[in-house]
Image 1 (cartoon, helix red, strand yellow):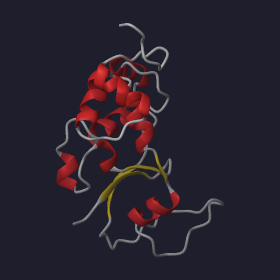
Image 2 (tube, rainbow, N blue to C red; image 1 turned 90 degrees about the horizontal axis):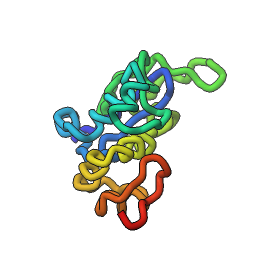
Image 3 (cartoon, rainbow, N blue to C red; image 1 turned 45 degrees about the vertical axis):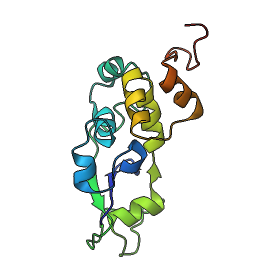
Length: 158
C-alpha cells in the first residue's frame, strides 16, 4: 500500500498522517475529521489570529502554511519532482520524487502541529484516544483534563 505525506514545497516541511493517528493511505487520512486534515487546516488558516483564538492556542505554527504550495506526495510515485533546489539554490540532480525529497531534505513538523492541537482540550483528548503518542505532560493532562493553556503546566487541585 502506498503511503502519503502532505508536503509544503515552499517551506520545505511536511506532515506525516501517522503522527496524528491516521493511516498513511490517501483514503485513510483524507476522511479523518480530527487527524492530519485538521492539522492541515490549522496550518492553512489565513487569519492566524482568529484560528489561534478558535483553537485556544497562540502557537506560532498556526497559519504558517497560508499561501504556500502544498502537495500530497505518494511513496509509489514515479514522477520526478522538478521544483526542488538545493541549499545554494542550485537544481538537484534529476531523480527524486517529491515524497523522497521530502523525507530526505524537508523537515517533519508533525509533532509541532500535534502540540499546537493539544492546547485545545477537546482535540488533546481526541488525539490521545486515537493512540497518538503525546509528550508526557500532554498525556497525563489528556487523561485528567487538568491542563493550563496559559502556563503549559498542570493545574494543582482543580
